[in-house]
Image (cartoon, rainbow, N blue to C red):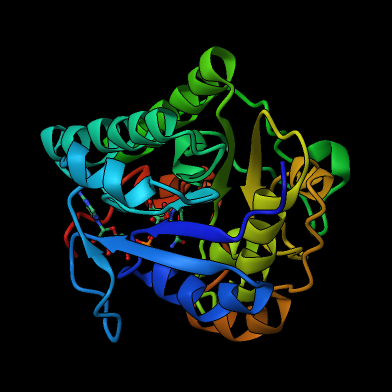
Length: 274
Ligand code: NAI
Ligand code: 15L
């Protein structure tokens, strides 16, 4: 596949979309933007709902790849998740298939495997103790379930139609980590851009699933499939550790919200819209 140049960024008005609008143009991409909401400072952004199949076909026409971030990013009633994340992602894949878009980078989430027990032990963990990418899916919410669906949809569209996807099980991509759990799953925005760039340009990805994080000292999962795409993370959350642990304490044994990869999504997930 030739290196993509024009990339459709769905969810461009959101937090991650905003970070990627800042960072990805430096890699040479021309971004076409789409969101349900207006995108600040971007009058040419496409205002469309993932439910609008015609708008999606028009939006994907002629792009070299898609980064699919749009959707509900927290827990919500099943019917809302169904419409935005399950049907919406299907609508986008159908539009891409019909218009011959060769690759999608899908924003999956750690919450597709959120009920996986977090690994125990002193950081850094032995490589063998890291959660492997082929760990069974264990969604922690309807939200996580929709990401699990998205990964299966991506596999189907690769096997059946040859449409490639990199599904990125993003940890927490914010400017800074804000919790002790995030010390393990944080992806710095700069590493996020590096990982999306690798996902867009690696050869022959078929459907590849990767964890999305920085190379944190307290890492819980195996970044091998991400590194195999050419991703070389440079950041580590450790400089934030002392302050966050002083404020919040270490993760506690016996606290259910600290026991699983998905953290508090397992016990009291944040509800959309927040
Ligand atoms: P966000 O909630 O800030 O942004 C999502 C965007 O999608 C919003 O601008 C919203 O208007 C748009 N959207 C929602 N429903 C839509 C629809 N039906 N049609 C068109 N646009 C719609 O979320 P954030 O944090 O930017 O995350 C982006 C993506 O990455 C989401 O899919 C999220 O699940 C995923 N993700 C993000 C993580 C993070 O740390 N930020 C972690 C794991 C996954
Ligand atoms: C996600 O999937 C959410 O979209 C994001 O807002 C964070 O809550 C992140 O997971 C996380 O686990 O910290």
